[in-house]
Image (cartoon, rainbow, N blue to C red; front, side, top):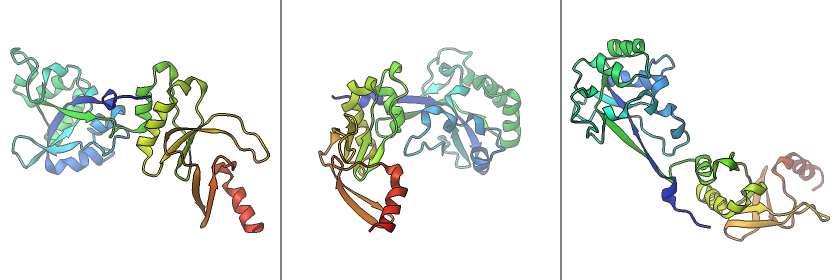
Length: 263
């Protein structure tokens, strides 16, 4: 029931452009920005990453009047023609794009997925310039969202992974499908790691609803074996043992009705 956090780690090498500082806000924020569809944050791999990836950085050459903006890797069809970690992967090739003198020509060759008309507009109106380096973005177990970790953990034939849960006090209640049960403890650890500290226990429904109080058996997958929960609704504090009470968050309206009229 163990996995290595390194299993979920990967490094993306992203291209960038150099932009005068006064144009940065418009280019990354305005809906009319011709650069917006090509920014790094449009990449699915960076959705939900926390803390959010910074797409703007210092220019790197000491020029305080310009900034670097990270672009999606999809604009770059020939990554070997740009340096990774500022070292060319093809430094002996004299036809390397970085040796082209004209900035617009370099932009068109370097970012072939961006229409030349858009690059010409960006170059003439916003003075963008190409850069030589690819910038590493490290995705780790700790900064990626739960949904992506679950997709990485489970083999493709078990996708989509379980992502929904019901929070009952400090407990996250899962209802895993049969194909996911062999991975239940690994899944429990993922949920616990990503949902703590508000979640201290992860359980899975392990049997059918039954008995006079319509209770159901649960199994602890990760965390503390503590079933005594505290739930507050509309200023009323409820404390109960999850194993002895049928609880459904969607029945909040019914509970409110009872408390207003029966107690």
